[in-house]
Amino acid sequence: MADFFDSIDVSASALSAERLRMNVTSSNLANAQTTRAPEGGPYRRKDAVFEAQPFGEVLSAQMGSQPLHKVNVVDVVLDEKAPRMVHNPQHPDANPDGYVAYPNVNTMEEMVNLITASRTYEANVTAIQAAKSMMNKALEIGRR
View 1 (tube, rainbow, N blue to C red):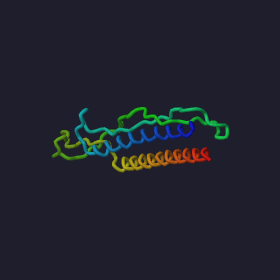
View 2: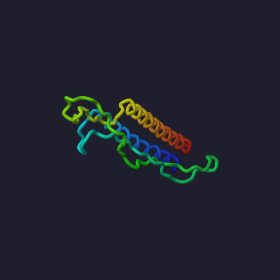
View 3: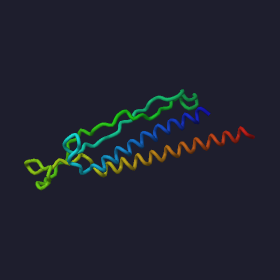
View 4: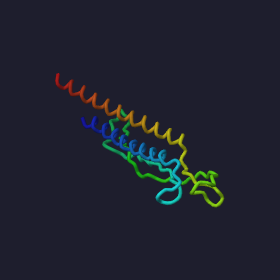
């Protein structure tokens, strides 16, 4: 039974990580036109950094003796790319040359990140459901 719970723990760690990634990506999309951030200047794109952390015991020799890994969110980092400069002299945040610094957010890239995170989340939900189903089947076998 411990192996079933280990697989659920691994998938649950991935669910948490992908949920955070979706939140960060949603924040990027929501601020794609924000020229005044609280830190000053335009909003800066953020990205979640994941890490594989060894978890549990090594699997049996038939499985290649590979350890399980959980997903950890190490940090949320700011993208270092320069802001996008757009000529708009009437904008209140325009510089003396008439250019406005817009966030370094690429909407298409963020949408792809959002879809990828969503699909990964769904895959981990499916993995948890499969583990629960296998646990129930194992319990049914034990009752006979």
